[in-house]
Length: 213
Image (cartoon, rainbow, N blue to C red):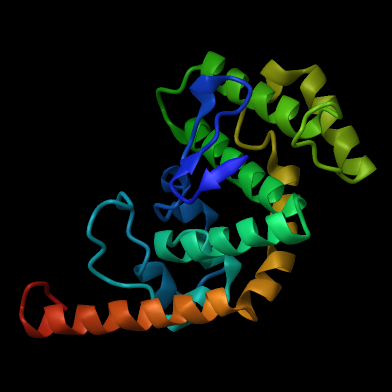
């Protein structure tokens, strides 16, 4: 479903293509319970922009923060992709759903968003992950599925940031389970090494007065 950390396969409608870049820019509404130190390291910049303050070791201890650091999310993505190929195909489905939920929420937050756009994204999410015949269907808890089906019956009345709030909590819990394995993997060691490298680079740039501390 997701081919690499920078390009995602289209959903049922090719106009609904997103990338990991779209959801890893440090949206403050998704940070959850984070330390002030970590929050300061997540400026609202494009992932292609220079981030003057690098993520630190403390920030990658929590998945709530990792999912908002472009560098960290790439490593976590690679881990899930390999896990999905080896033994757990659901890993990438949960990750892809998380991306789509973030995308839907972002559209809802935009002041000029149109109801047609929100409806299109919502229907795509329903079709892609809730329909049994879909290749990427997820096995939701029956109670949660009932809630989602109830909202779907009055979709236009529920096209707001709360439409998938129960699904978001469900998916985040699933990703937390995978994150435990990630922290014990070689990929996490490599992430730590890369963060140390960026911290050293930052210190060099500060010493050279290329950026202000």
